[in-house]
Amino acid sequence: MVGHTVRSFEEELNQLTNIIVRMGGLAEAQLAGAIQAIVRRDSDLAARMIAGDARIDEMEQEVHAFTVRLLALRQPFADDLRAIVGALKISAELERIGDYAANVAKRALVLNQAPPVKPVAGIPQMGRLVQEIVNDVLDAYVERDVEKAMAVWRRDKEVDELHTSLFRDLVSVMMEDPRNITPSTHLMFIAKSIERIGDHATNVAETIQFVVKGTSPTERRPKGRDSAFDGEQGDDKA
Amino acid sequence: MADTQTTAGTPLVAQGDAAKIEARDCNVFYGEKQALRNIALDIKANEVTSFIGPSGCGKSTFLRCLNRMNDIIDGCRVSGSITLDGEDIYHRRIDVVQLRARIGMVFQKPNPFPKSIYENVAYGPRIHGLARNKTDLDEIVHTSLERAGLLGEVKDRMDQPGTGLSGGQQQRLCIARAIAVNPEVILMDEPCSALDPIATAKIEELIDELRENYTIVIVTHSMQQAARVSQRTAFFHLGNLVECNDTEQIFTNPQHKLTQGYITGRFG
Image (cartoon, rainbow over all chains, first blue to last red; front, side, top):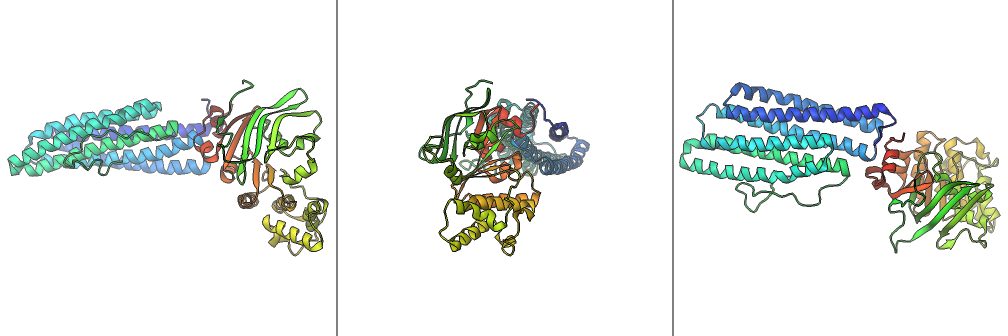
């Protein structure tokens, strides 16, 4: 499609996309760092990741201010309107992803005070998968590729399944030795945070479809069985 | 562009959902030049339909077809059919003066007669014999001015010239004048383009109130205005009706690339 007659509007829309992409890159890095902090038992790295979340929060504010300005001054329609509303929604999802990554880093600090428990190995596996998902959904956003976004959307099921399996392992470890309860509980929350990041990535995928096509996914998102809540699927998921 | 392109969206209303005006295969020529191509469009009763599109796209031409204002233009030829409540308005038995009373028009520039406010509104009902006596006529003038949201501002100076009013008041006077002959449809050709934002807001509010009793078609260059006042929007381009749909759909998720390009300002 040809560019806008008003070129400065075109530039502003590109600028908005750029902020989202940078914000996404930062959220991705925060998640990767937090997981590394657990794997390498690196408390310095964890502390840096905790501090790093503030920048994502700032960028979310930046996106808010920018979108409100664009809505007021440009009064956009059609795909422009959807792109701006979409950026606003995606920025909120990325901000939450940053929060969960910071939470993982905080728990890494606590875990590093105690001897490691065995199921910790499941965390990097889940982390890698979710990092891939976040990475793919950001690519899909840049490329405005609905197919790619929907592939992410369907893939979140794998995260749910890993989460459930890790949950069971942790319950067994706790039953074996009560001294495992504290670190295992932290690991459970970490796993839950990573799983929630996957959910936010699927929200981004849905928003990409809205931005590009103006529609929402019609099928129900496939979900793995969620941890111990058998029969109570989805709990607080979008 | 092909002569027989299909219109995106829903230019025709669903069966059973009565259309006030139906246009089919409507072509308009100015001499050799074709201004409109195969327009097929339904206008629903008691709704506001807006026509948008770049200058010269044919939207005003089509609006003028709806009450045969094109008849007075030399070399203008209309083919196809346009019906009002199922009756062909181009049939030779149709009395054009009567037709224009049923389908009134408000123009871009407020054009009150150089007469008193009262006479501006009373003129139409008088020539159409709508009032039996002075009391009837007074009643029609008052009701029309009231419906046009102007009565409060002019009731103490009905004998003063209509041309002495502000632009916005003059436009509402013209709307009162159109209403006075008890029309079914009101056509508006860029009714706010000469008005300030407050006067524009008053007209838009009025349009919204009027649709309870009238069917309204408005041509506007302001996309925001189309979005604010209309329930359905039709987009014209180079004499074609490109897309027609619910206004909300047109402005959030248009189906045709040309519509999208036009409303987002990407025409180059």
